[in-house]
Image 1 (cartoon, one colour):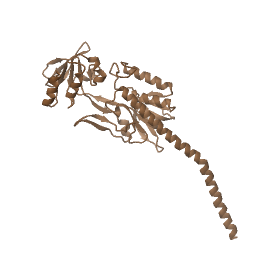
Image 2: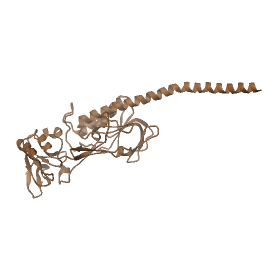
Image 3: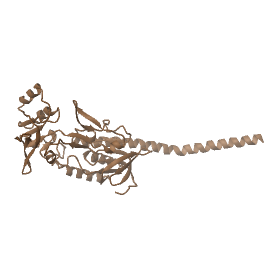
Image 4: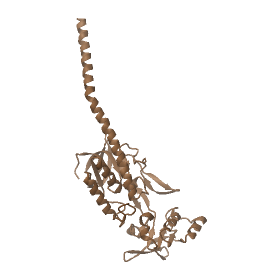
Length: 346
């Protein structure tokens, strides 16, 4: 992309559900909108998106294609690219720079860059991620109902995960892996729900005919499983925001760090005036429908902020002629007084 001369009301960085929802709302508010999309949505490995009312089970990439088309119908532009930095301009706007050198300007920014799921170094997890390696029961639990599910303990939340997934199947095995031993009360809860605990380090997954068949332990034992649940580290894609001085905040569950996010108020407004965030970059637990709702909320607040700025400018412009006329009259009065004084001296 060559340098763009046009200045947009809003540049949306990130073309997922949050970004496109925001772009749609802003375009319908008759704002000029540019969406810069790197084309790497977090849920791309998944075959279907769930719990999106009216679009239940839709493939994630199809949902985004529909969203881009809907936003375009109202004038929003979308380009493929990666934004590497943004800087604040003296007038309060922003200069946005892409990896290919493309540059544009915006009065406001909506950043919806999402998060990266960082998986532990266990053989096979990355390859099966979004297929049989899962993390969210509300996203995928129904699809593996009544099937053998394994929970890979990666944090103190492992017992909670096992109890939660037990809602979808009565065949749950909790692999303690490298976690400290559980307490007596936790073991009692697991036993009461019929959840088995397997000691030993998990070294990899067994796959046959492109299907997960089991979990392999360090000693070579394979426990048959058809799905494995892991808790990734959820790391905010925050490079652009960091270039504006917004550092990510660690998210804790107990004393365990589960990820990072960019702090914002309930509307998505950050500590940098003119910059909003929405979706997983601000809320690690947000599902697709929630991310879309957050994008809409942020967009409405951005438009209101722009309305306020437009009004201030209009008032200043309206006052300007009167100010100029007042200055002219004062100048004439002063000059007149000076001429009158000279005449009296003479």
